[in-house]
Amino acid sequence: MTNFQYGLTAVVLSIALFIPSADGSIEAVKGKRYSLTKQHGPWMVLVATIRDVDETDRRIEGGMSAREAADQIVYELRLKKIPAYTYEHEEKIEQLDENTGAALDSRHYVAQHGSISVLAGNFRSNTDDDLKKVRDWIRDKFRPDFLMDKKNGGLYSKTPGRPGPLKPFITVNPLLSPEEVREKTLDKLVISLNSDMEHSLFRNKGKYTLVVATFSGNSILQIGNRTDESAKAKFDQVLGGHLDKTANDAWALTEALRTAKKIGYDQDFEAWVYHDRTKSLVTIGSFDDPNDPRIQTLATRFRAKMGRHPRTGEPMPTAELLTIPKDAFKNGVTPDKQWIFDPEPKLMKVPKIR
Image (cartoon, rainbow, N blue to C red; front, side, top):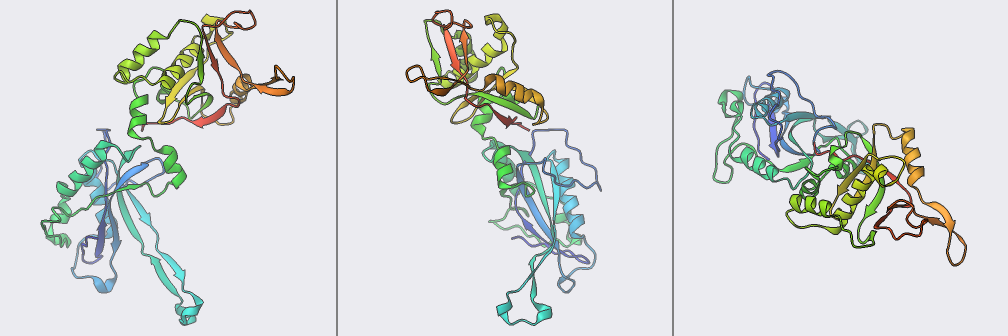
């Protein structure tokens, strides 16, 4: 912890971390308060945690309050085009254990002092290369003007092990639960696999979409001699020649769904493709409300239907298929391609890069 003491309302700053944004249009209005919300992050830098020091600890007349110091740090970071925010911790008073023998009217202690944190950056991944670069810049180069001015009470002095007044480290938005952080986090590989890809789910402007097919291995049965050369060429271009079969299969199904009328189906579908480290997904639709009635209509269409086992005649769910050409099996024709949909479509939130 690095301590700074300010008079009149002396404060102690415990320094932590920060992270930048790629957005160059960061507002910086002196005197304006920028409060942290759940929309920020999920990965950020905790630049400082500041609290007002007790009256008896004040050493200098004049100076800045914790709130003033926090707002000033935010302002100076925003001047550097780094989105920064304040987050206020309320003081927590808790009761002592009855076995301590303390008097009844003094069985309480301060479990958490009231303080104000400054957090910066809005990153979707803790592996983002810019995160470390900015952390290092804050540590080595960022010199808030008011901290270097002795009239404000700053007691920082440079040492070989501490070149600057701040000691940044990576954290998450404290307003988010662990589940929300996991949900909002995208690692660098996932971002690279999905960015600038035709029909990428990142381009879906809705909040929700319906997963209809999952590719985690040989989920596609391709029959005949035809291959999807156009899809292969696109993936070779984007992924630098390292074509993953499941990704290619998912993209090919997405293309087929978007042009389904050309192969004999009654409509085209708004299909999207999404890749992560273990699987590729094909989704349909763009919805702002999870209760949108169109979701149930689509789910019913792609959900597995009850059929009969070919040998035993017992009832069994039969997954829906998309074949090229349509109704190939009914017409006794070997399809050029066929895809098997998931037995039960599932709603998912659309991932957003920022």
